Image (tube, protein in one colour):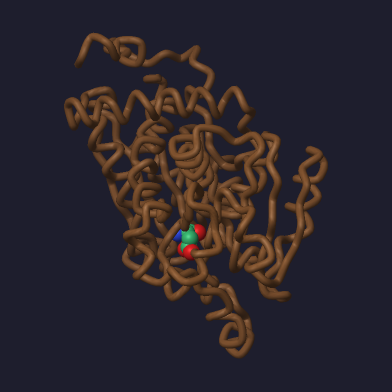
Amino acid sequence: MPTNSSSLYLPFGENKNAAWYGKDIVSVKQFSREDLEYVFGVAHEMRGMVERVGTLDLLKGKILANLFYEPSTRTSSSFAAAMERLGGSVISINEVKYSSVTKGETLADTVRTLECYTDAIVLRHPETGSAEIAAKAMHKPLINAGDGTGEHPTQALLDMFTIKAELKRFDDLTITMLGDLKYGRTVHSLARLLSLFNVKLNYVSPNILKMPKEVMDEVSEKGISQNEFSSLEDVLPETDVLYVTRVQKERFENADDYKKVKGAYIIDLDIMKTAKQKMIVMHPLPRVTEISMDFDDDPRAAYFRQMEYGLYVRMALLAMVLGKA
Ligand code: ASP
């Protein structure tokens, strides 16, 4: 362990007095501006340590359960990598069809079982509110990795870290969210977190995929300006962060509705000629057709860097809830 990271490293046991020790991370509503600064500080140190030494033993002996009832590539593997880079280990349950869930076990019983064997659980589940139900049933930390169309708090935290790392500030930025704002849980969490700062929010979507009123009401209570559009051309030139989302096919009740909106917006080199030179394009990924691959080499394409920032943020969150940061 390098000596200059000793502020982070707690070699003997956990710091049970640390603010985030034992806490669940269910919603971004739990985070203040000060909490964000703290997460960013720890994530920054994690980045430095990964670059210098690769793997640490901060969480040696700790076990994480990764419980995924919905598909995932980045969230599950970055949590697993985060835990292993901190010296811990992971039990992954991705195929719930091979678990007792298919025998009719409730979510509450499943998480109470897993917490007997592990120190924390990361949960992704198709139902909104499931993370809260699981957290109430458990005694150990529960981290929400996406609850239906509800929230995806750790994605929003890594999105905020990306914006800070790339543009150095939040205040006075114009952030344009594009695509499926109705079903996209990442934008629900991100809009709420951004409302802690002096930002301007633009929402661009097909009429049937607008940002839910509940989220807009919460954001407007913070005095943040929000405007809705159907055409990206109206707002692209003023945008500092373009946050593109996938149309969430799996949430549609009617396949025809999905077909009508699936290709509504496509970001390519041509449309990006009207955007600022100093701005970034983000996407929680996976992308389908909404960002053309010919844009990937443009320096404004931040979505691959965004994934890497996610590792450091998830390392920070694990260290925090397990009393090591
Ligand atoms: N990976 C993100 C999520 O789980 C975004 C997406 O699936 O489109 O919400």
